[in-house]
Every structure is written in C-alpha cells, then in structure tokens.
Length: 316
Image (cartoon, rainbow, N blue to C red; front, top):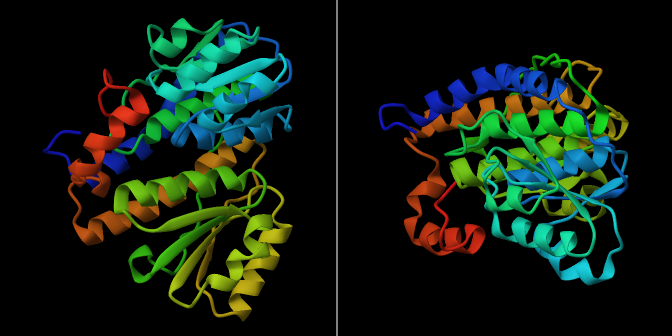
C-alpha cells in the first residue's frame, strides 16, 4: 500500500474492484475444463480457511473444511480422495506440508493459488490460478473475492458473474462496543468468520465468530449491552430472525445484515462481506488509522510471520 493512500481509501478501492475481480476470474476459468471431483477435504489458513468453509457448504459437505495444522496431524488416519488446498501466494507452510503429505498417500491435490511457480503449485496435480495478484496487503479483499469465485466455479460450475446486492446499514457503530460477536446461519458463517478476521487485523478489535447453533448453547449468556452481535443470516434466515428477537428482548445491541434474496451463494457472501468491510472502513476513518493496526505490531510480526510462511517468506 502506497504511503500516499490512506487505509480507508485502500479499502474503498479494493471494494470497488470486487465485481471486476470476480468477473475476470470466472471469465478466465470458463475457458478451462473443470476437474471432476471425488469426495475429499479442503484446507487453508486465515482468509483461506474462511474460503474453505465456503467450499464445504457449497459442496454440500462432500468436502470438509479442516485447518491445515489439524489436518497434517491426522493424515495417517485418512483414506484417499481429493484435497483442495488454498493459499493465494502458495507459500503458507502448513498448507504446503499437508499437500505434500496427502499427495504422498495417493491423494490428488488441487491448489487454488495466484502463483503457478509457488511451493504449493509444485506439489499439486491441478492448479487453479487466481488471476488477481494484488491486494494481499494489508486487507486482502480482492484476493478473497477471487478465491470465492474460483471455488464457486470448482464446486458449483458457476461461470456467470453474480449480482452483488446492496445491504442496509445498521444503527450501531463498531467503536461504541466493548467487543463484537459475529454469528452466521448456513453460508453466513463464511461472512461471519471473514468479517471477524478483518476486525482483528484492521482495528485490533476483540471479536469472536460462531454458527448460530454454537452461539445459542453458551456464548449468548456472556453478552451485555456493551457487546455488539452482527448476524449474517445466509439463505435460510429462520433462526437468524429468531435470534434477533432474543437479542432484542435481552437488550443486547445487534445488527441484522439483511441482503435481498439472491440466487447464488457467491453473491450472498460477497454482499455480506462488502457490508462488513464498509462498516470497518467507517471505523477506520473515525479513528484516523493510516494502516491496519496489526502492522504496527512489529514485535509480533517479526515472530509470527516466519512461523506462518517459513524463514524464506515475506509478510503477505
């Protein structure tokens, strides 16, 4: 990110590119032969794990999303199948290691990456290239949209750019809250997780994400009027509407993100994350942030980055 560009301008620019990024990605993939899939696993870290959850849901659970570190521990106990491994730069160390381990056990590895010469691509049987190479820092908005488009093509055969719906803004602002909890129903879990990650990265704001079922079992009781619950209803919405009524009765602030009904999972998730990022952008402006707050923690970045990408990698 250029020092001449403010963080809010950067986020706005990335948001304005989402439709083009998705359109270009689907146009590129339309010319390729879509691989036939067996049942299997999908893995990625950080934003890519949010994308893995998307893949699990749009595949109707024929592919299970698993954290790469947990999956690497379990590789001796899994049979054969397809592994979809997601890493924009193709250098996330645990993703590469699990791809190597499963390929050595006879699995077919399908990678989703922007770098066809990356370590992940080199251990893959099939590479699905991301055509958008920018935006990895500091928020990774365009990259995430490209990954979702690629997964939508891979699992659902989508080649037409989706409609991105306008979502009405809520009354509450992020900076008024002690903590934020994002809750998703069905495909809304993807939006809840991704938005929570961006709250951590951009604002260093405490955030937790849950499916509605997880949230109702215990987390609900720890909230107070200084908390904010953001509900991403997905397509189903019945439980989300019931949850909003529960929160209103308990006097717990909430925002119900309510995009119009859409035909595709991709358009729904993109609409919801655009709402979340726009809300974060407004908080960035109010705080006057010049860069994501995580980038000011050089002490932590120096220690954590080599653990994620390996000593030869740079911060992504």
